[in-house]
Length: 286
Image (cartoon, helix red, strand yellow):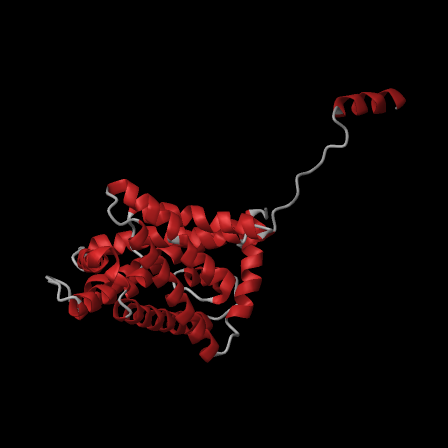
């Protein structure tokens, strides 16, 4: 495993290459990221069907990290993970324009990928599983996401992206695939188990719930397109940014990459463990 200071330096080198990706390719990587996260959300809902409480959260947490895994190793970009770009920004290795441009393109790509996946899943009739009960589950989950208060959604967004960014950080600490996978998996399991809010997941879940309500003629009380944005995406996205930028990105930059951290002098070695003996000998010679 790499040490935390080595992780920080490795992440900076990776980020310097990431901001140079052409815009169209970056958009497509964002679309793939939306695909992967959406597939993980759908699989988590199906696998945890008929489970209750903590058991449902636990099984969802075991499945969902596969979406993050595909983003990192199959090729995909995730807006929430890219909040760590503030680390190379603070180190003056990338510009704020480069960072904001990447954020914007990836966010749009994530939304397009999640939206397209919601269309494909619902109108491909994947929710027909278990006598159409998965369709009802999608509507129920989507309704729950659009009835959370702004403040609660914001705070849960902060907490979520702390763990998303920690999963990125830990993955850079591994030197082989399995150690990197373990680094990715454990923080995501925690965030899903605690029920925090992830904007990219909601980009899929709420449209999928809306499309299911249309296709299967299900009641959608307090579920509409306006609530997707002002009840979910806006507060959760702001929370995700604060969690990733301030609590992880700024914190680890300050600890490991500020000038005083990089220029810590090595400890002075005392080659003579008993200086009094040397002083006595010098006095005897004199």
